[in-house]
Amino acid sequence: MKITIQDIAREAGVSKGTVSKVLNNRAGIGKETRERILSIIKQRGYTPDYSAQALAYSRTRSIGVLIPHRADNSVNGAYWAHMLAVISREAAARDYWIQLLTEAHEGMLGELVDRVISNRKVDGLIISAELLDEQAMERLEGAEIPYVMLGRREGYERWFVDIRNYEAAARMTEHILSAGCRSPAIICGPDSYPHYRSRKAGFLDRLEKSGINGHAVSVSELDELSAAESIRLMLHKNPGIDSLFIAGGGNLLFSSLRALEDEPEPHRRLCVFDDFPYNEFIRGGLTALRQPVDAMGGELIRILLKRLENPLCEPEMSLFPAELVVRGSL
Image (cartoon, rainbow, N blue to C red; front, top):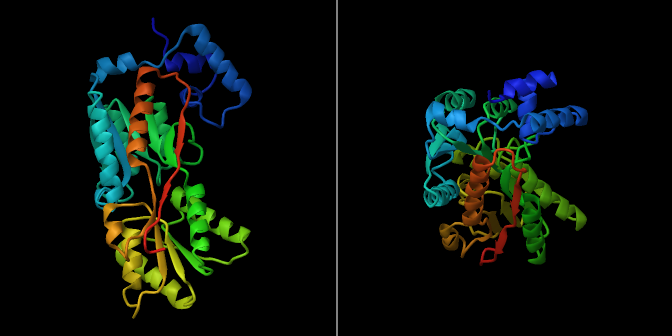
């Protein structure tokens, strides 16, 4: 009779979730417990029962892309439009297709995860790391659904593809200083987003090394009007700001431009994290940090298919640099 994860947990005297954490090389398991579980797995010749799953719901040749936002708050932007196109292309080249999984309304992530687990309509998941909670991840791992994250989430830094946010922001800050700016500001999205925290830290740390005081604002909402008001207030309180580093494209960029539209004569120099075709037509061309979206999307598919083919393979973490694209705005 085939050994199951429940058998391993029973013999090791631990929960099924603990065994799942060891299989996924998760942190939070003591060395002795981890070694005991791995020893039992090896002795019993256990492998996760993906063949049984295939019999239960048939191999779908489908990959779910789970984004923990409403679609109108995520996939309508240029970044996700590009990333989804790349993921779709790379999946199709390997005879897979994608299903887009988003919230119908904010706050239904748990329900969405439960539906993915119960329906078993995907073979694996690509998950946007933003706003994922620990309970949702525990349920996914307990269900033995292979996944890879786009971005990093504290406590789940095992299977992910991400940009080097801190280093990229520090590099842009060096460029700002080399252009002669001495009172720069960074505009970020909510602090609950890990990538915005990293970008802000890269900016502020680089300024501190240069002995320069910078300004930072983290908007609480990413909708264009409320974000623009937060940015407008910062500029009113700090009229000496000579340059703005906008730490994200899409709504954050357009909110910043809206906040600046009342200036009688644009004088603040601008740069942005994320490079899209329309950047060339803003302020004489926006200086930007370009993410290698094509390479990142291909890496997401490669790692996920590796997990599907070999559930006990070693974890992979891929970090990409961002390219500085200099144009007329800074």
